[in-house]
Image 1 (cartoon, rainbow, N blue to C red):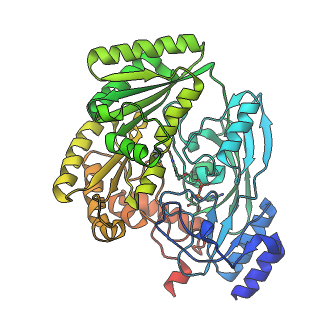
Image 2 (image 1 turned 90 degrees about the horizontal axis):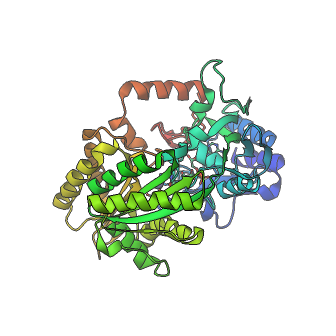
Image 3 (image 1 turned 90 degrees about the vertical axis):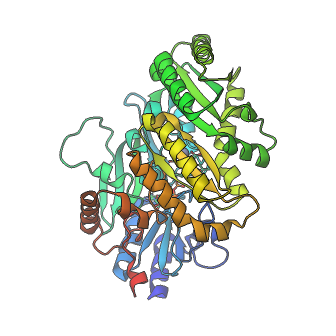
Length: 478
Ligand code: FAD
Ligand code: MLT
Ligand code: ZN
């Protein structure tokens, strides 16, 4: 059966775009090194018509498909399982910009377009596509939408869902839903777009999207502040919202150990003020008037923060380049953590008001329960999203630590998240890493509705099985 399918796939996309031998680890291993899968083959279609044929061929053979964009998932969402029976559908060759409508402020791009290229295309047209993540040099817009990515500008512009007006999707049956609308209003029934966004490849393949663009701000300014505690960081957020209003586009918090890791693993990056305080804050301000105006607003904000004691020291970037350097420090935390070794990630959201108490409670709990544990706490504080990550005690074996402690630590952290009315996944999704955990914490009626949607759209369970909802794949059952 598999060789017949392989031949069919070669006929559809061309022999050189079906990979089944050699080192396929770039496709089969996830970014965090948490899973090395084995694909039946990697298929790289170039057009929507080819995706249609691939899906039909796999459906006829009863073979599961794992869609993949840039393979930067943090939750092991985009690599096959170890069975060697799943087809990995990599969309990177579908990388054309189909249209840019300046008057409608929209851009239509194929799913495999790298996020940075979309930002660049918008910028070349004098406009802004605000989705921004540290992985933007390799993640794709299809993956961003499939995982409803967040990132560093959600505070002002929303997450990927809020930036998408229309989709083109190949369904599990191999039909094309032509939903590439550029309309900002369309109340003609259920919102299919919002069902596919955030579905992590479990309902269909996103092949293209129409995205919202924005006018570029007159100036982008950046500031970095040392803050004595998480409650001081929340106080500073409130002040920044008062002073900057809608101009506040990003507000990130970084714990001291997160910054120490950047300092250790990327010594060429200058990490400001990290030794002076428990946390640092990075904030960005988009000013609609001018750089001078924006800077003056930032200076006033920081002066008040220093007076009120919610910041102990602060710097305003004196150029775009210096602002970018500060952002580079923040965006290197994930890579620094990876360089330190395997780790546990908790991408959680909480009401902003609950964050100081959550952190005090959970820091103390983990310190008591797991001796020597190292917390890498940072994230998008303005969105109530913490990356409350955990590194094994210094000098211990990370794999052994994960094998014995991960489940227990997850339970401690996620129980605390529930106690403070939060969510166990803010922006990374569920993937396979959290699929077993989801049903412990999600409302049972919501889970039942999700299963009904999955059953209706993908009755054969061939679209990224085992992700989001822990329904095993057909192959895994035999
Ligand atoms: P992949 O990893 O390839 O896939 C992600 C999921 O989408 C998988 O379930 C896959 O099956 C599915 N999928 C991919 N393409 C399609 C498609 N065309 N149709 C249907 N399903 C599809 N995420 C954030 O939200 N915020 C951050 O700040 C952030 N920072 C990061 C920093 C680093 C250094 C790294 C490595 C990752 C970060 N991420 C972040 C996670 C990741 O980059 C995002 O989830 C991103 O949106 C994934 O895009 P991708 O193209 O790599 O998707
Ligand atoms: C980030 O915001 O840098 C990533 O989403 C967080 C992570 O690596 O845990
Ligand atoms: Zn993040």
